[in-house]
Length: 164
Image 1: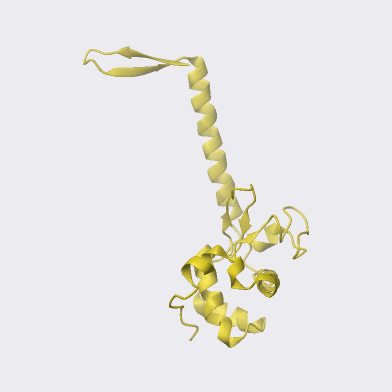
Image 2: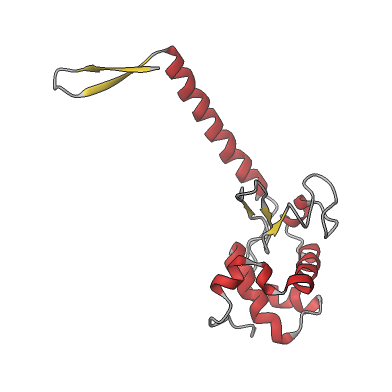
């Protein structure tokens, strides 16, 4: 609990008792822990250039006609950062990697699982081969509309160049 006193200039100055000090210290420790946790989740990731992604997409047989959509998706979902972890979402799930693949459906945290049979941690490293294969599976099932960022920021918009 906290109280207040009036100082000489007639302004309220909060007074914290030991319980209030403890609550503030616990909040500060929790905030520091979250910052460290979120920083550690992106350590192995990589920010890709458009040309690096075009090369990777081509290696994975992404059709030329779709390259610009895949680039836009990567830019808008993660800023082309393979280490991005998004969330928590309203349902408590998190999104992983360059395509922000959802952990509730497509991967499993800490072990292989989900519809892509992949560990979510493998989606936030610099190797995006498995990310691309999982994203292709999502695309095959739902098209680009599976990604909110593609629907809102790419569909019907001017797409980035895939020329390198």
